[in-house]
Length: 119
Image 1: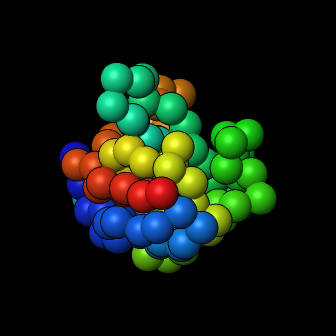
Image 2: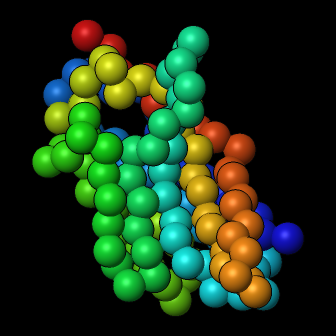
Image 3: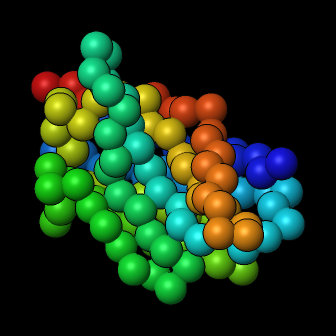
């Protein structure tokens, strides 16, 4: 069972910066992709950014140029640096880890961390 422990988040004014980190433990198999998703009140959870073990990245259009995802494979930790934050970035941010085993993908989620951007 993979456990994800998130840290970071909080309250920041528009234009400010925040950093998130997520450490994975307990996986017996390589973690293929790690990423961040967010969910705003009344909205569906959406992808923010994800990164493969080979450091290939994928970003939501709304965060391109402002957010940077990175990963330390040795520590099974993923980071999200968020700059130029906007009120629309407010939501609960969830860490995700995708483990591949026998051609099946198993997804694990963190407990979520609140990010609030004030005007």
